[in-house]
Image 1: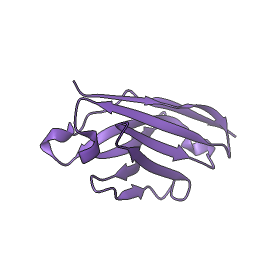
Image 2: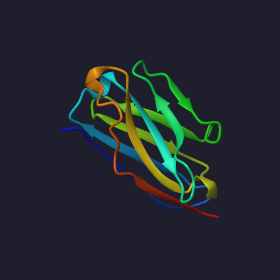
Image 3: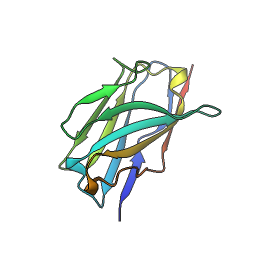
Image 4: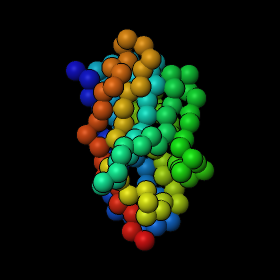
Length: 119
């Protein structure tokens, strides 16, 4: 059974840091791409960062230079290191498997972890 479980969210003051984790199980995590998305109340879900199956990373312009996506294939865990947090980073953060192979459980989502940044 495919499972993605996020953790590491919380409340932090502007300028602070948090590190989110997404523990994956039930599929070949190390061979697949992953992504972090976020959704703030009243707003559409937006892409934060992705890491492809070959390790290529991309970040949204709004977080470039502040957020870093990475993964530990020994632990089947995806990370999002967030620094210099801003009020507008407040959102529910979720991880997703992005494929591209048939064994990647593409489109599987975690339940999300809340990040709240106070100004």
